[in-house]
Length: 137
Image 1: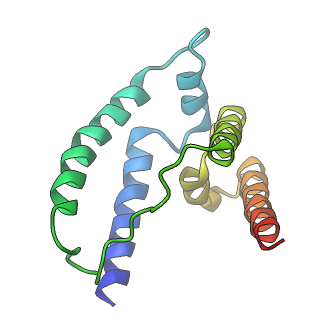
Image 2 (image 1 turned 60 degrees about the vertical axis):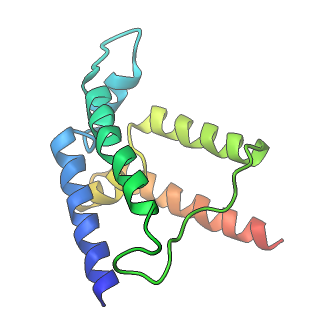
């Protein structure tokens, strides 16, 4: 139960951070990616601030024998940079660049009921289902 409450609180905090930083506004994200046009560098400051908190926090937390609210750490074991990883990253980047949304902001924005967001989330879920089906085959 403690893990679920901690996860909920972390998710709410993350959603608030997305809203405050402007990551929920697709045009702001697209302007950040448009370095040859109406470039808006403010999201680089958001990223820098996030890294300044995350890097030392990650270092300090992973030095412990176990997390505070879990039995063990759940860290990825794969470390290889392979074709699947590069293709997935390219697809993620293309989707982000075309829509101005990535999964977390899209899920927060679903409450707006905007058709573009609903289509994005539907396509994202379809892609997740397709991946699951192809992994079984």
